[in-house]
Image (cartoon, rainbow, N blue to C red; front, side, top):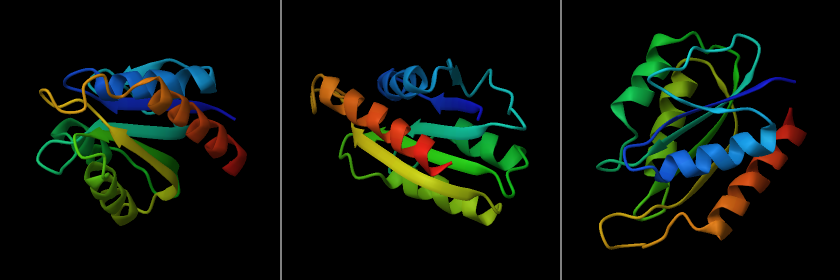
Length: 137
């Protein structure tokens, strides 16, 4: 089974989560600006949360690619840690006919709030999420 981890991160928080997931899967995390969709891989897509929405880059990537019947796992970081960015990505992907395998979200630092997040505990949870998604495929 092949895996691809693609993320959008303005401040590096989602990148940390992407890299933790990618290390568990034995692949490199790819910035959405440079990623080309692997036609055979299970896709992990992640974004930070900006005004309760995922980045425009990740939404553009979803809209520009053929994702019907593709298996996708979602992850995100946000100041509140409530996953609004993940839910919006999920809605767009479902509209394109993708299969959502699972979701992960955690807190990310925003200004002085949630300092040090995602922390090692969050990154371990992200690695466990990746392990669980492997068993789903």
